[in-house]
Amino acid sequence: MLLAEDIFLVARLLIAVLCVFALVAAVRRWGSASAGLPQHRPLLMMLIVVLVIGIGLVIYDGWDNAVSRREQPLLLGSWLWLSFDAAVPLLAILSLRALQERDEAMRRLAEAAVTDPLTGLANRRGFREAALRALEECRRRDRPAAVLMFDIDRFKSVNDGHGHAAGDAVLQGMGAALHRAVRASDLVGRLGGEEFVVLCPDLDPAGAARVAERVRETLRAEVPHPAGGEAVITASVGVARVRAGILATALEAAIDAADRALYAAKEGGRDRVALAAD
Image (tube, rainbow, N blue to C red; front, side, top):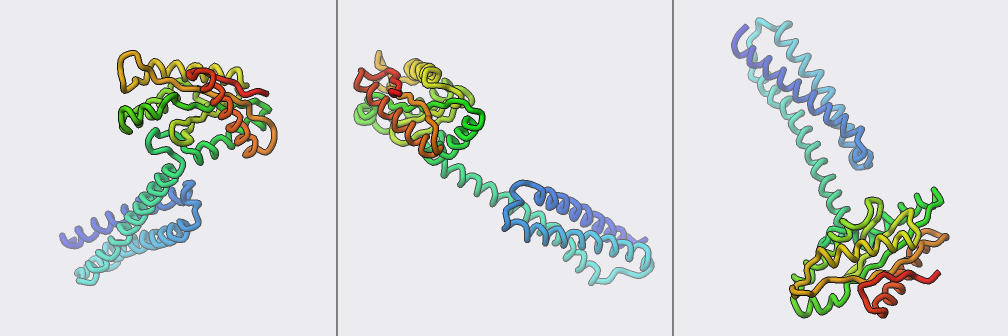
């Protein structure tokens, strides 16, 4: 067999391997959760059909040149079709990669919509969505839940006296302290400004207050005050039970009750935990 024919058959084999690789990737994507999106399915179906046909044509053309017309010289058209056939799996792979990059971009946008960019915690919308799911589970298992509202004491003086960069550092420290001090099952969010919220599933107000005390002590010990010296960062906390009723309404009512308890803690001297009255 001539050298050109050997090269032609090796090229056909490589194209077939590329087609199989792209087909497997397309089938796996079809079976993935993201492929369930309606806008993905027509393209994936088209890719799968084209790749199956491409594999068949590559095998047939290789057999035709190696067996049926082994003694005939290769024509220019055969090499042109070889280039066209190679483009099929390559375009399929590029299309699958573009789909993956699009999904990743959409995922990042979805995360940004529910995440506070400064602290990395859930924002108001993200906290509400996660909290409603957690409360649904608590309701299903007939378990209690409580809400904690945190407000950094005298935060305005930090911003006014040391600049917004120092204030941002304190907010980030507060977010980190919350992550370290709460339980793994607790949900943490930043509602805005210096206000933070925590949902404590499976805890009554007394148990949630112990979590709040742990956060308060962590904040004092681990988040430095920009003034240095003996100055410390403190927070006041309000605690309220999530009561029965429509979940969204019960959550908002608990946040309001915890917020009132928070201001009672501030009026009582700050740097303390106050429970909402039953």
